[in-house]
Each structure stands twice: as structure tokens, then as C-alpha cells.
Image (cartoon, rainbow, N blue to C red; front, side, top):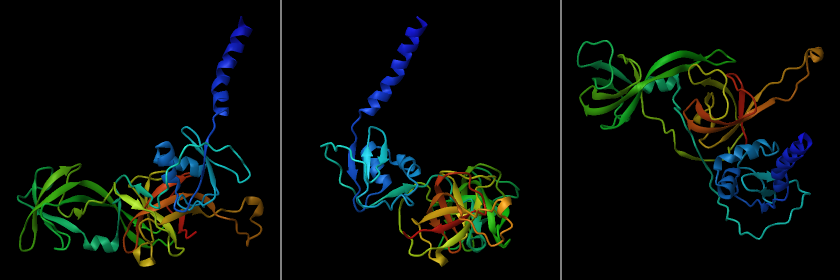
Length: 326
């Protein structure tokens, strides 16, 4: 009886394997304008499947730079990149027409760091209608900001300054971490100040708190090939965040002044140190360790925000980034 049960269990375990082995995939030849995002969305109705396809094919350096003529085997629920020599019978099922556009959605607060120059231009809460020290939801306050930033009826996010951020390599002062406190709405304009009402409070709010327009956290971002190779450093992340991974937001020391644009792809690397046995050769330089890829989702003059799309291991402040043009 024990032998019979063992044989029965073995047969049951083999059934799904045999079923998968006989599955005939659809073979799709990549065309100009195709992307892993678009292919995943159209063939298996899951645009976020593409990181798995990307991760399993290290020769695909950028998710929007796969090449015409490459072939994909499309199964029920998964996609595989085929070696050039592999031949599988193609099904007669009609395939969707590829499109040139690709977009991502960036989630989470992008304003966890503020550069020194942007800090000087930000609005602030300067007073309230009485002499209270702390303010909270429903309180009326007065704020100062430039007329170009102010819009009656608009909502602004309230922040306090966190830790000073220095460059990991040069120790130069770059800006501060930001701690989100709540939101307010402008209600009226006066000669020197604007009236506002605090509509949300996550913590106590004080005079001097910063005001920034809400960051667009769920907008679609078109990928854009960088016009030049730029090299920078990951300098900050969300307060209290040490190790970063997929879907985390980070800040880099490249911006509009260097030619960086929203939609550019960044490669994240870390210099590889020689082993103890090789340190006798002082001129030995090893290739960098490839850590992952990130998408630029917001650009300021001297800094930018990037969303980590893929990480093979934890990413830290001080890791290096560069933009890719091919």
C-alpha cells in the first residue's frame, strides 16, 4: 500500500509538469517601438510582469531598448526571450499591433529631500490668528510665498526640515531631508501674506514650516533616451530609509543643469573592490557591480528624483548612477 501511495503521489506531481511541457507558445517577433512593458500588458494583461522578464534576461540593458528581430515565446501567464537558434512552431493566433509609447506610474511621496536652492524659494507658514504655538487640522494660518507659486483654492503640502544632507563623496552640503506634516488650502490673498486653512495634519505644525506644491505621484511618464552619458551619485532617500530596493524613491546629484530629463533611464552601480589577495596590485581596476536600474520621475536644477525599477541587491547612499544612451 505504501508503494502504491508513493506511485500515486508521483503521478500527481508529474501531471502539471507534463501539461506545461506540452503547452505550445505563441512566438512573437519584436518590432520597432516594442517595449517589455507594452508586450507584458498586451499578451498577459500584466504590465508589471516586465521586471521578471527583464531580470531573467541580463543582456536586455534597458527595458525600452529591446531589438527588432528578437523572438519571444508567449505562454499562458509568462513570457520567455528565445535564443536565436531556438525554433518553435508558431500559432496562427493574430497578434496585437505594437505601439511606440511606454509609460510608468510613480507611487509615493517624491518630496523627501529639498535642495538648498529650492529651499530658498519655498513658501512658509509665518503666523496664525492667535498666539498658539502648535497648529493642527482646521486652524487658520497666514503664509508667505511668491505670487507665481500662490493660487487661491490650491492645496499645498506642509513639511519640516529633517537632517542635513551632505554629498557622500565630497561632504558638500546639498540640502535637507523633508518630513511631511500635513496639507493646507489657500483661501485669500492680502498685501503681504495669504490666508490658509490646514486641511490635514499628521503631526504638530509650527511657524516656519515649509510649503510645497503637491508632487505628482501617480502620473504617467514617457521613457526618453538620454542625449548624453551623465555620471552622478545617489545622495538621499526617504527619512529613516537606509537600504533601497524595487519601487523605492531616491534622489541623485544630477539635474536640469546637467541635461537630465524626466523619463531618462539610469543604471545603478557600485565600485568593486579588489580582494585581499589582489591588493598588492595597486593599479588593478575591476568592473563595477551592477545593482539595478531607475527611472527619472522629477528633475530640479541641481538634483532629480528617480524611481528604482529593478534592484539585484540593496542600494545605498553613495552608490553611483549613470544615464544610458544605447
